[in-house]
Length: 412
Image (cartoon, rainbow, N blue to C red):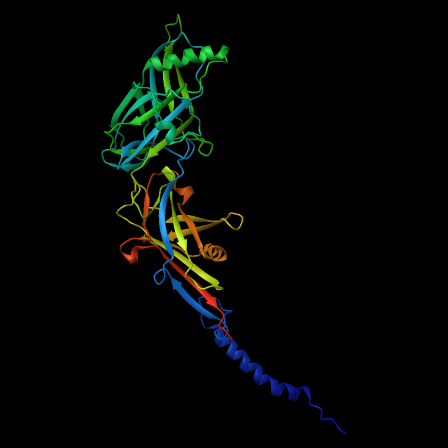
């Protein structure tokens, strides 16, 4: 029996048209836009759906909290009073000499270096304040509660300032005359403590600058820190004469560490409030219990709308970036961080990818809290408050929005 042999040429004549047809189909398919859930999803095996908080409830509520920032929290010093805010400064001086207990103090002048940030009436720029000595110990771990405790400040003011600080490209320093007796007491105490270790100096060598009701603005002042070593510290210029000398000498005391504390207006209920300068952030409580079970998440977008009326801003631009954190308490406290953006000055801030949060919620109890924060590195030099509409706002269009893209496999 003979077997019919087919030459290679004949094989190519049969198969080449099929290959060409297959190539044309695949190339034409490449010109089609991939579905939003991904190009590997086939309509005949998986159903792709989009669900949002507009159709089912996903937000339980929101509440604002405060970190009560410590003395080392902010990058700049804030001082003044405006729009319901009050900012005060503490400064402790570290280079007080121990060799001048008998010196005659001719004058003592406190020196501060203003910066360009202003919150409130930046036209009048009026700051009215008193300078006090400090009666109780404080450290860089102090908070606003430390500053507000009874008896923390001396009753009598050691100096006062009431004036306007104009906004200029080059900001001149401001000076405040303080009582010579205060510096004199520091020199005496420092000399005694040199030879007596039982003397407690934890509350010594410090000043508090506290605004009065006449202030119309809060200003930022330079602060010398590890990250800003070129900034001038808070200083006291002392003119003095040694015992038996007719020569007037001058020395400058520099702050070893200083702090700023700010109280802010009451936080509006059912609002998402952010303020890095006061340590304020908000928790957005979320529930996904109404979502189907056994779904695969392909995309999730969170959108917040800014309340422009409640938002308080100084003379800097409005920040276009905010951040958020989700802590998965049932997965080893895994922290997932997300970033939200406002495009071209829009009041809508969009977190384009919060898939990790949604997946974490669905794996566990389906309820949790997303912490909404300022964009930390940028907001350390301002007291601007950002306010977003909450999930219970009367206008549904202003409420937070969560849009989830997911897929399910149809039953056979």
